[in-house]
Length: 155
Image (cartoon, rainbow, N blue to C red; front, side, top):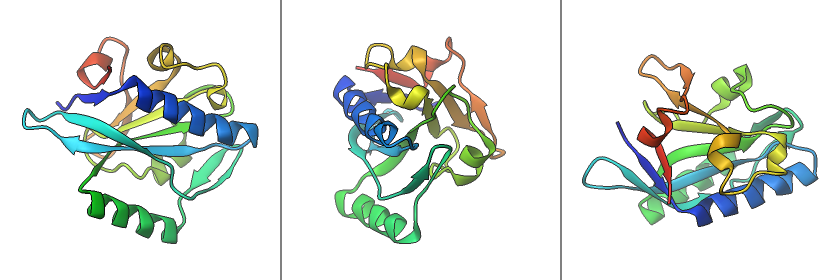
């Protein structure tokens, strides 16, 4: 099981990007990029905000933006470790979130932040957000609070 180590500065940058979308009344997605460590875990090193189309209840990454994103990964020798996106109200993984997720590797995380991240801080991020992981049979399942330290650690 891979643990993602995430600096609180990455969470702060993530929340700022999500709030920018919220000010426009739209969802926003960001990608957490980093590198795997020899012990099988991973360090998140960068918040990447791809060009995206969004509305109050969805986001989509256009093909040209995906090409630019893949080029960025390759040039910087990074991997996509998790995606984080906002919802206008409660945090849950919708059918659209399931279908449009960019993270597609087993154990990959998809984190949903409620209320366009308006009142969420780095300190409250884990408690406020809903965290989901992709299973080997391509289903998104919620990571329960007691399991969260085995998947994500804010440092």
